[in-house]
Every structure is written in structure tokens, then in C-alpha cells.
Length: 224
Image 1 (cartoon, rainbow, N blue to C red):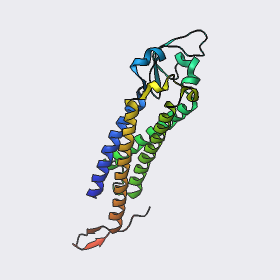
Image 2 (image 1 turned 90 degrees about the vertical axis):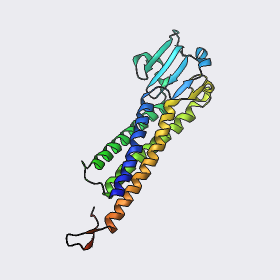
Image 3 (image 1 turned 60 degrees about the horizontal axis):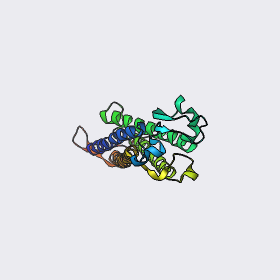
Image 4 (image 1 turned 90 degrees about the horizontal axis):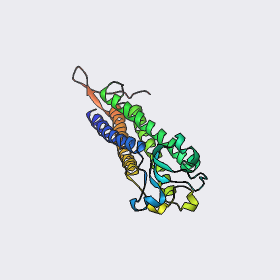
């Protein structure tokens, strides 16, 4: 039982740290950033999942010469004239998948903490530990797919991408890196969770405990 608790604790530490990194990267606008030497010509400064920053930026299709300055929410009224260009379908898909990933990792971490503290029964329950690990792992896989898709799309030539101008002058920034690090932490955390689940399963099936007469009795397997 102690071995299971230690494995679960180590898994929770990795998952919680990964979740903190994920939330920071998820909510900040530094997934993509432009080289400071070229910001004057492009007008683009930085962009995240939910926010984009420009300085004296004017879109090619803007007939009235409207310029965009500062950082605004992607779905704000300010960006309505360029929303289809700024937030293409593939980026919307990433936003949806990253939200699902966040929910999975958040729920998995909360349930894991409750199980560890004994609020929810199931410290040695194979299915409980396995479910937590699966949620964390699936959340990490989804975020990995999103990172790959964003990295590929942001590096495409402007003619193909039809997105942010001068893509060769932009680079993936620290918000993107934090989400990538959180993915690795989630992977290792879920692996520890899987080991904890299998250990609990084996201890429950083959473990022995003394009865009140001092005799060793083999525990009965849990019926799920």
C-alpha cells in the first residue's frame, strides 16, 4: 500500500506541475512571436490561443486602412473584420482540443488528489488509478497533436498558410514551450500512475496480511 501511495504522490506532483505550466501557456499570448527587428514592417507582435497583439497593423483586404494596435481577445469586436483570417478553422480546432485537454488534466489531477487524501475511496483501487492515468495521458496526447499542428501551420509559407505575414520572421515562443514541457510531465506522470495501478492490482491479488490470530491469510481479489 505504501508503494502505491508513493507512486501516486510522485504522479500527482508531476501532473500538478504540468497542469500549472499548461494553464500558463494556454492563457498567455506568446505561442508565436515576431522578430523585434521586423515588427515595424509586419505589424505583428505576438499571438496565443486566445489573444493577438499588433502594432500599426493593416490587413491587405482592409479598404478603409484600419490599423490594429495593442493586444485584443481573438473574438473581440475589434478583430471582427479580420476574424476569418486571424482565427482560421485549424486554429479553432486547436482551441477546442486544447480546452478538452485542459479539462481532462484538471479533472484527473483533482480526482488524484482526492484519492490520495482519502476523500475518495480507491487508493489501492486498480480502476480508480487507471482512470486517472488515462485521463492525464489522453490530455497530454491531445496537447501534443495541437502543438505539432500549430508548429507546422505557423511555419508554412505565407501564400499557403494565408495567415500571419512574414512567417519566416516569426518564431515559437515561451508559451508554446511551456505547453510542450507540460506534455512531457503529463506523460511521465501518467506512466507513474499506470505503475501505481498495476502495483495496486498485484498487491490486491497476491498480497498477504495477518489476521487477528497471527495467521497469514491471502486477501481476496476485488470484484469490480
